[in-house]
Structure formats: C-alpha cells, structure tokens
Image (cartoon, rainbow, N blue to C red; front, side):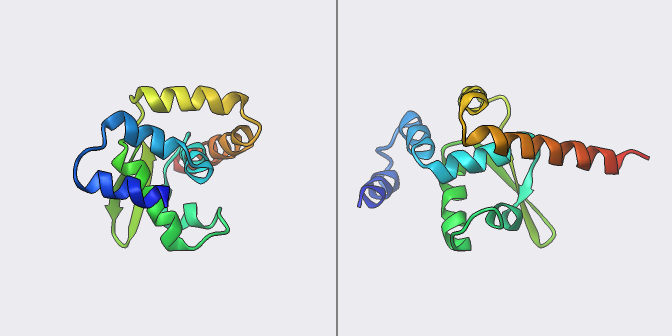
Length: 124
C-alpha cells in the first residue's frame, strides 16, 4: 500500500530527490543490492541470483535505486550491467554504514573479493 502511494506521487512529480533516496534506502533488499555493488558492477542476473525473490521483483528494486540516483545501468550486448554512482554522498554514507552493519559487512566483503578476482583475471 505504501509503495503504491509512493509510486503515485512519483508519477505526478511531487516526490523530491531526498524522498526518492530515503525510499530507496528504506528497503533491506535494496540496501543489500548496494552492498553487492560496492566494489564492482554486476549484471541483473548476477544480482537476482543472490536473492530468493522473483526476477521482476529484483528488477523493481533496481529501478527504485536507479530512480533515486544511486546506481546506473548500462546495456552491453544482451546483458544489463549495474554499478554504483560513486561520487554520490548517499552511497558514501551507505558504504560507511555497511562497514558496521552485521548484514552488509559480509556482503561488502564478498563484493570486494569478487572485484579482486576480476582484476586478477584482467592482468596479462
């Protein structure tokens, strides 16, 4: 019900940027997505594989994060890649919070390990 009211307000343009950010961060799955993207980008499928919800539900969470200006998407061939918008104060603060959050910390470590492995593969 609350999501529907927010969506209606977003459609008529009455939602401020701050409201979009707070709405995006109000959801645990969206905060987890931000943690997964903290060190490297992922495809939509790679993000969906980490959750026990439908792909359309994950897609909706990604859309909310993108609308809030927290992530960007880039189509590369048949895949859509998502990444954090790095020079964003909210993402900086969220990264700090995830360092002390018992749920976000292990996800952020997984993301960092994935980024290191990806970098190691790219070295000649």
